[in-house]
Length: 312
Ligand SMILES: C[C@@H](Nc1nc2c(c3cc(-c4cn[nH]c4)ccc13)C(=O)N=C/C2=C\CC1CC1)C(C)(C)C
Image (cartoon, rainbow, N blue to C red; front, side):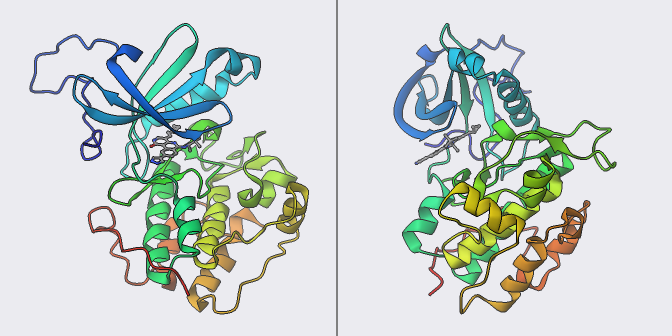
């Protein structure tokens, strides 16, 4: 059975009904590790069964020496604190962490259906109805993390995962930015340094090295384009070529690309972060775009996901 995918309670936290029994810190001995699910630049995610409750989890393993050598300790703590703070059906849950002499371990929600990218490659593209559903789920997950003062900064189909219900889960917050309360909404709502993955990185990240909430909206525009077209809008033969296309806004829609989706994408792939539809905490304006006509926003996380159909 899947790990606590339905409720937020987990086996390690005492529930209100039981006495406050001391919660024993988990160790690796509490899990039977399975196959490797994904490899990150500083981590490996493996399947794991909690031997005490037979529930499936994803266990992210980080090599301490590697993290220290690569000076990524800050990012590791940002990810852990961000994940513990976020609680939304579209964000992967972090249940507990522990460590041993060589590694750090995160016990996370298992997303049984893996990466969204796998399905885009398998189908070639998503039809309009499926694109609408997944774009709406990603949009509400982005709206939630932004409301909590978090910018993801590296959204892409590789780290947007799918659970057993084929619902999306945002993951990989190692490069996220937690806006300080003072930073949110004022002129300094910029997060510096880090650059995301070439195809999805926003122009402001390339020119001013400063991401903002609107950078995640740019990535959403790239993802919606990719769901319908089967490829990202900016793709050069190498990273530098890709960056060139982005700063020059050099992209075009393939023949047959649906008109309302074309209008939406062109309102997101806008150079000026403030001019993007939904920028400056106006995500409601994004939800009202004609492309999302028919979306039942209140049913989005209870209705069954649509059967995946390619856009032919
Ligand atoms: C994006 C990530 N890949 C993955 N991260 C997570 C998975 C995951 C699952 C599959 C999968 C499941 N079935 N088949 C494939 C493939 C890749 C996965 C999961 O289930 N639960 C939490 C995860 C991540 C939690 C997040 C805090 C890091 C990278 C590539 C960085 C390793």
